Image (cartoon, rainbow, N blue to C red):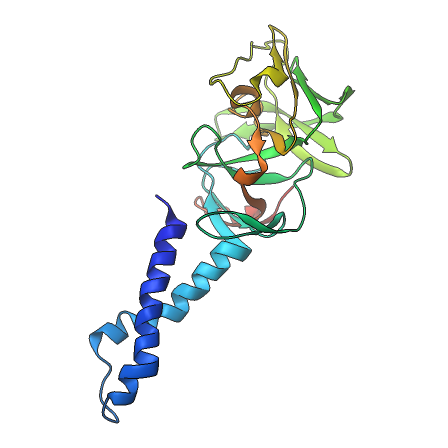
Length: 263
């Protein structure tokens, strides 16, 4: 369902009703006469719908986290806000960028349209920029021949059932937490679809190695052993990126300590 198109349709319909009443019908009603039903239930909603459409299209958009692929950073049931203008201003519905304002950086958590099925929204962390050589070997990430620094911290209790080794990973000055299960049990990584620029990647029993093409990004979930990401379905084109996730505004478990920004 294209919610932006539905919202635009409501905006246009209520806008026409509002303009018709504002500039024509209201001037022909008797003083003190009640507004007709179509004004109360149509035109009166136009300012609200217009405000929602503008905010959602150009400023921020809410999303709900549906899976555990970004644990421990984001949990199932977290409601987040996504900054729509960090990387540029796009026209709603057709989603064409008209103003360039920046590009994703390593460590950014981004919402994007899933390349194999753009009707779905995914959320992952950017680990590889255009031109980078990304290697994931024995559950360790390296960029352009250098291992990404990590250090182990206390284990993470997932859903109150089991503990998973937790690490702090660092991109420059930005630190974030990741989950990595027993590193001795490295499984083979294989592509699940034939994605564009598949020949930029090499798969073997020990590792996946990819060179990120121009205008694309390599993304991974923070829950490294429980995330289908660029290792499996390829690169994210710049035009698929919706925005940068930056704030948890609600949690369905009413864990209010989780509210706020994250890395």
